[in-house]
Length: 236
Image (spheres, helix red, strand yellow):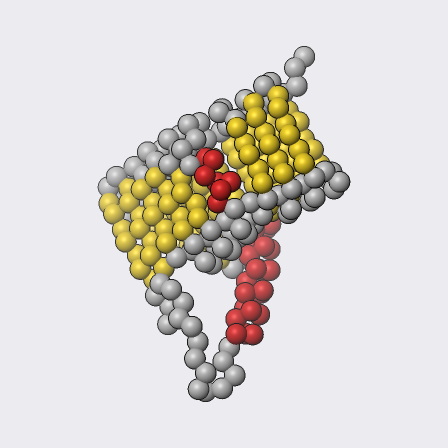
């Protein structure tokens, strides 16, 4: 019997990992808080990495990969570029990856993109004919977003305890209504918002003559098969 799935959990003394197994289909690394370097090669279709707070270098060479989920790692955009045009990737989820500043994706089979609490993320560009859903939550630095796909059904933006959900039906009309986040993400958003508000209070001017730095306008460009939308959001 060949090994198809492997899960490493709470290996706090693990600093470097190299996984090479052509038979593995599922790989999970959970609470590997000391892991700094990771190399994976083979035919895995699913890779999940959680609580790898020290992970700064990760090379993944899995031509059949369909699902990649990374939660709590300090990898930067050089990690994401490995999957920019990945031929089989369908679902990408990056949560609490605080060193990623740019995400650009043009993977032909990509269906779903989730970006949550990536504080340095300033640019998001997603193109591809199969992308259906995009979720962006707690990425307060995002000022430039370009989405171009024929099958886009929903774009969700999450802040605080709820979020606005924008449906993109074939007729091109927009329906917006508030929704609730799952408890785990809601708690993350509350903690992040409290920290952000405290930071803003510390930056407030102390005298009437003091000036504040202008926040750059956000420019969000969304295009699908039936319509095109350009949003420019300015802060005063």
